[in-house]
Image (spheres, rainbow, N blue to C red):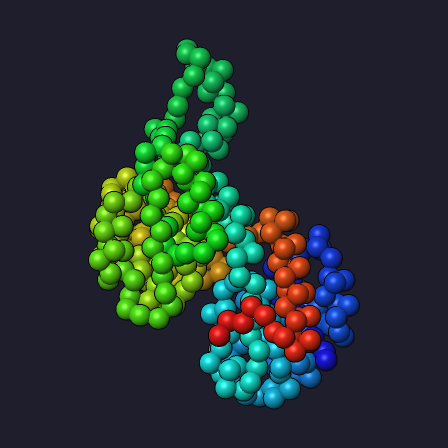
Length: 315
């Protein structure tokens, strides 16, 4: 069989070896693939690796040679899995590979908000400490996590790790499972009560009909005025205009986003000008160790498919 990698650069900048993957079968690797290039690039390939390049029902129908779509990531909303199933195509992903790195990034974001480390580093380098009459000062209120309540939307190893770290800080934690099927999660009594009691809300769930737009004007108004919202999942979990308004009006205290609705972020995205908002370029799962694990499990997925025993199926 022949395999093509459509967007290898987004998870491998050259610091991870492709050799274990290319040793499995004839392989072509592209750093990036545009929609205009996509049709030509998958012709003749039975195995396609796509981290974020969309694989539509139309594209699947036009390529009867396809046998496996492997997603070197956890999220698979960019692949039409219903169409793949109808054509007998295996679709597999890499679940929970970022279980430790994502949890670590949640607290990197949260501690930046509570301790304002970068703000004070800039202040010191600007001479403020040299000119200070006292041995210490602070440019903004600093807060302790102990005793605060963290609500985590989404279950699994990543959420468990986030909860474990929160407990080490003395926080109370509540995890709300978010099943793919069912009514909107934000309408459930449990979720609404969680929004009300949370000092920190962490979005760590898949994007699905029940979670899309779950953070909106309605749920934001349930939150405490000094609460923090952290998103390490998908941008479309949040209604951007409602979050912008909430931050401007002080409905909530802070937001820390590692994902936005359109990625890469658009230059006119209004959240770029939102007050009390940190935005990162979807890097929670990009530590070297995390990306190596991603490569290792992707190789295992392809090897299992070639052996006739596919694993990590998404349906």
